[in-house]
Amino acid sequence: MRESAVSRRPFWLALVLSLLLLAVLLYYWYRPSADTESTPGPRGAGATMTSSVSTMPANRRDFPVHVSALGTVASLANVSLRPRVEGTLESIELEEGERVSRGQVVARIDDRSYRAALAQARGQLAQDEAQLATAEADLARYQRLGSSSAIAIQELDTQRQLVRQYQGMVAADRAAVESAEVDLSYTVLTSPVDGVVGIRNVDPGNLVSSGDTDPILTITQLDPISVIFSLPSQYRAEIASQLATGMQVDIYTSGERQHLASGQLSSLDSTIDVETGTLRMRARFDNPNAMLYPNQFVNVRLQLEVLPDAVVIPETALQTAQDGLFVYVVDDNQRVERRAVTMAASGSSSVAIASGLEPGEQVVVDGVDRLRTGMQVEVVSHSLPGEQPGTQRASGDGSAS
Image: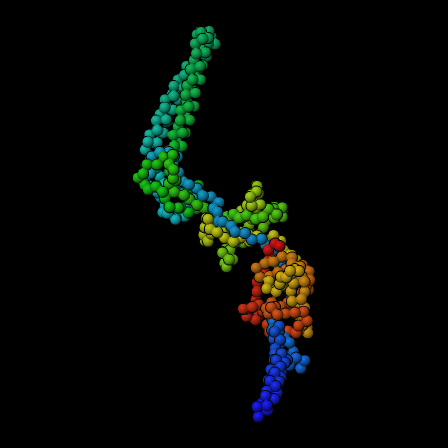
């Protein structure tokens, strides 16, 4: 009895091992491919290996090429209103934040002492003019008498010198009158530009003078306004050659979420910053609604050129590998080809291709993770990820590469 049980033990052991081996073989025979989605079933039984992708066609169109930079809004005129004479600040004619026109009265200084000084200078001028008139009349009589030798030549010469002396005094008096008129005009402070009144630093009733540290207030021109930004010096020659004909500059909020204004490049700096290798530039913008404010940071885009008839694809279609740039192209038989390409310029949402792709070819824009050359795919969409089918997209602007 014991011998029979012992003899059956190898049989059961062999049976268990055989079942385990059969289970392993069946698992590897029926499991799905790890690389692609497939229909469950045994390999070689007619199953089709496919992957779902989204494609879009390569288009041929003009492609604007831009360079981008961070810029700072700067006023074209920022005037610190300071007194030119000493006196009590009588009044400020405008409210803080109020718009002011060129030549409009902004503040007044007590002018009584300056009016008195002007009256005194005019009185001295009148006195010296009277003395000059008397001296000139005497000189005319002396000249008539001198012609008949009735007076000495020395007296005639003395009278001529006296007339010249009074003429000098009158000239000095007239200059004093003009100086007093200028001082009096300084007691009325006017705006030299169109702008906006800032917060005042001095209240009426205080004594002000030309030596004060702080201005009475500041007037800032807002329309037109400018944006100052820097670009690598490598673009200097290209930009300088187009400056005379006009170069459009667009500015946006942070992240280019909102377009703020379009303007024209107006000037380049005279030197390149040796530390950064960049060149400062200024662009002018109309700003009637004060959308731009001094010291505001903005994103700047400057159009360098337009690539005519460029082959353009969505930015998401372009892939990067160790051997360079490539795209996946889907042919009419729904098979994938890995295609090496060369980029001409790139933008925020589009890329211009210099070589390797023809217009009309379908490039994969979503679902590239598991693709291999020759793989069968199923095109489920002709739109970008997260985009509704048929959505109209704006022309993608490019940046210099």
